[in-house]
Structures are given as structure tokens and as C-alpha cells.
Length: 295
Image 1 (spheres, helix red, strand yellow):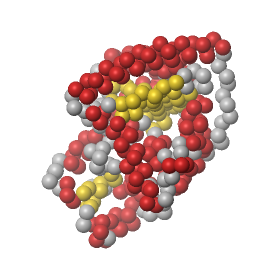
Image 2: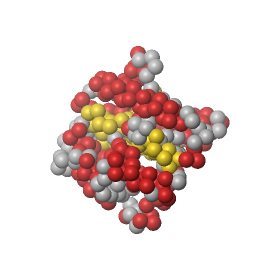
Image 3: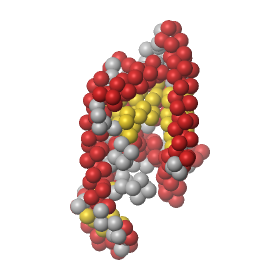
Image 4: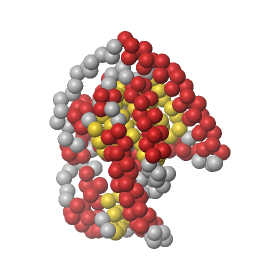
């Protein structure tokens, strides 16, 4: 999966995904001593690299640059999150490549946000305006992309029902900037994640009990949310269509994305991401962990 994303994976990261506890030293020794692994992989500076990629001496250097970019992105994200009205968001978190610690060269900074129930588009509209201001006043900052926005009720049901291995990985990798309690509450409802990554789920620290239904929005807030869904949603849909056309013309078909929206969510999902999801499922099917009918 790391290869497909143009990145490397560390021994530490691998150890977190195991079904049984093993130290980084034990894992490194196992990789070196097992002929079936050592013939394909080697360790360089804590990273696992493929031997057939030795023809690219700059691979590790590139990875270190991407990881430095991810650290810088997290700093930008923290500053942006500090500008958002706390009452408009139950949670603000970094997702995408930055959350995995190796930012892509595109410099987009993906955010996953949870809004109070019934106020998704009210919060989203405010965040879109603030993102435009932030990028204008912060030269060199990555492009803020609100790639996943959910109302609290929608987020709770999604975490409880997803049953998808890539969703599980993304949830575990999410870097929470605001609303740690909300994140832990959502993770508490997603106990199914432990069937894929038991150690990582345990370390996620889902200590908060699942929350009940939040306070219902007023009739005025509900009406405004519906109005913004229709107006802003239509604008974003047209903007997405125009961008997709440019991506196709540039030969970047894997970057073409789908927009899924309703009054309680807005989610952007590229073809590359859809293909990655299927690769996760295929990898886990032989172990009997992924069962489509469980979705």
C-alpha cells in the first residue's frame, strides 16, 4: 500500500498493525532472519525498502522530505484549527497523507471535521470561508481541503457500521486537533476495528463512552442548514465538475473524484482512494477478515 502511494513504511508503523505484540527490535530481527522476507526487503534507517527498488537511490531522501512536509502541514493545520469557532465543530482532525506522516507533493491538506447534529453545512460554510482567508494570509501554506465533513449523528452511525479495513486504517491514523473526546467516543462505537488491527485499536485509547444524541438544532438552524446544502452544495458540485475535467485533460484520471453529499455530510473520494480500498479488501479476504455482506 505504501508503494502504491509513493512512500515508505517504518518498522514502528508495521509493529502497530500486527495482531500480536512485538518490539521494533524483534520485528527487525524477524525481517532480516526470514529468507522469504530478507530476499525482498531490507531495512534502511528504520524504513522497510524493497530490494527491487534499489535503482532509486533517492527514495529514502524523498521519503524524509515528504515526512518533513507532513510535520509542517500539521503545524499549519493546528493554526487553522485555532481560527475555527469551537462551537461550530465537535471535532477537527487531519486526514489523508499528512495523517500517515508522509505528505504528498500536491501539498493539499485534508481535514476531517465533525459538526454538531443538524449544522453540518452551517459549519462547513464558515470553514470554507476561513480556509480561503487562511490560505490568502499564509503564503506557502498547503491548500486546505475539507475532504470529509460529517454531522455528529452521521459520523456516529458511520463509525459504528463501516466494517471496512481502509476506513479502519484512516480512523486510526487521524490526527485530532480539536475534540479528542468526540474522536474517542466515535472510536468506542467502532469496536469492529479491533478485528483488523487489535493492537492499534487498543492504543487509540477509546476511553470515552459513546455519546447519545446531541442537542437538536433550532428550526431556524435546520432551515439555514438545508438552504446552505442546496446553495453551497451546488456551487461545490459545479466546482468539482470543472476540476475533474481539468484532471482528465491533464491525464490524471486516478485523481478524478466523486462528491457525496447530503444535509449531514460532504465527502470527496478519488478513484485512487477507491482502488486502494479494494486492495485492502483483497489483502484481507484470504484471512477471512473482510466480508462484504458485513458492510
